[in-house]
Image 1 (cartoon, rainbow, N blue to C red):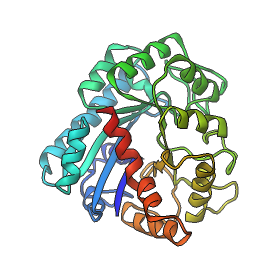
Image 2: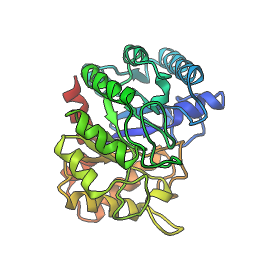
Image 3: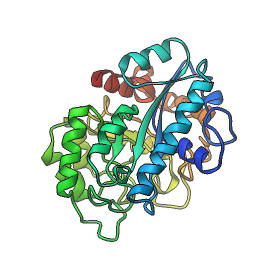
Length: 310
């Protein structure tokens, strides 16, 4: 099988624990993920809400330096991908196609010039917020969850569109989501968000939001975190199927993909780590999903999206 995962927090965890992304005992490692025929992985630099200003951009710089160093030391296993050709070459040579992303627009430290710096570092996608609010706008779990976009935020998303940095609206408040949609015509991605109709949580997407993303040619990555999958205490791979089925019923055959949230969440025990993703793949097939559709969800939809970005 082929795998394309839009979101993990392994890079931040490795930085925080003085570990690594290649060989570790985390939910995801490069060595264990290479069991698949092809693998592209988005590695997020998470900016926790307590980091703002210089501390936030400094955190990004340290994570990026560590990322580059590990890739250089393991170039036979992993390739940092800044464009479509990089991703294709990594896949063709059976390397992990590593794509740098940012989780939390606070990384910009309120300075639009830092967006160009992130672009130069190879960042291909950025969430505008984490749970709380930042200089760009309101987060889905902020104390003022109805906050929308700021004037600075409008300048950020317009520049992201110019730089072909994908606007990731996972973690955005509802008002921020719709403010973004009314400000730019760019494709939108929810890298790790599920359906609010299936699990009533503010971090999940409404059907209207999903339809906006679909209409823009964007993506929605299914999140494996328990609290976003089920309203009850238990969650399993079957709940991932429930969210997938709901999005597919809304016409999301080319929209739905994966955003595991490995190393950033309490994920389901059925798929606790990257090397068990084939279990979920088989679960989809057993529930009468066609091989073509499963291949689209697990790889092709995200691969084709990034190919269009150039």
